[in-house]
Image (cartoon, rainbow, N blue to C red; front, side, top):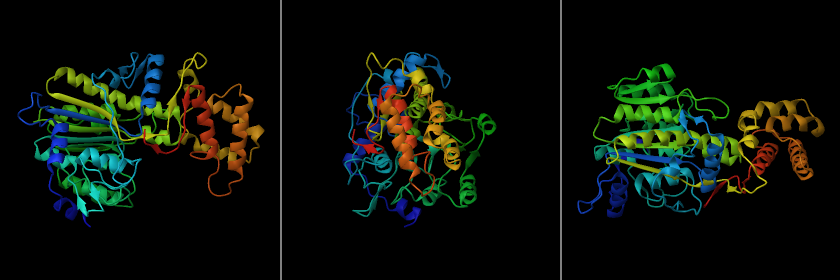
Length: 428
């Protein structure tokens, strides 16, 4: 099924879906006394649970210094929003959702099977993504993520696909979307198609930006914009263009129009949580919260016209945040880790290639993760993981998302009160 056929055979809106989407966009029935928001921000912390938020808030309060250019000494900006609530995120066929089905539900008001983007294979129908719906209502649209914009969550707001991994097909829908601002990492899963997709985007009026100089040179009347730049884990490298930068630029370019809907995703909260990497997860959550702070500054200028929603699509890692008198400050514990677990692959590879024994490798690894004065139980855990990984003869054995790396970041997290119970999505 082509992208055109999916978009051109959309299922008509039901009354319930109209209510859900109009409520999200603020287009409420005339009997409502609520003002209609002209500017709508939807922030999605992918994989972000309550414990993730509380740990990041504790980290920010302890650190007491600027993160992403704003003063976070008072804690997370998102926690100062006046209303709190909960939601369930199960998909049509799974109690624990994936990001694609969850994004589809946010985008269309319809639950779909897992891994699908705005497409119900059971019924053989497609649903109109939010970008098209918002455009028809007169809103401009911005879709921003720390992942590639053909990844599950951002794709859910402009594309239709039976499977979230149809990266080429999803990317080919980008140039024909009514989105006014795309921001994220370079597209993923392509095999030589990027030139064709970029050419199509330019033909349809997009300005392509791939570096900070081009970003800073964007003018007020530039038309549609597609900004693509690297966004590694924040604990490993600063971003040339951050989520906060993207949010501020999208506001600047769209604020004088009729109104906008902006989705901003902190994608790698989820990625770090899959690895149980507490330091890296907190860095990604702070990155997103800085973008929330930008939106809240805009809210102060337009208090009667702006709606900000901060939510999650699901929880990842089954995280518990436990603190007592023995836990102490978490910042020095976590910041003793020298970067993300994923970013340490080359270090682990050196251990593997030189065939180091455990007694040789242990002090080296302790230095990477700040694990001084190991308790006997901690040493046993690491030695067992080292031995099990060493007996695995297939592929890269020690680093990244292998058992040894997980054991190390879990020990770091445990010392800071972070208890991980899963490597997967949960129903929390």
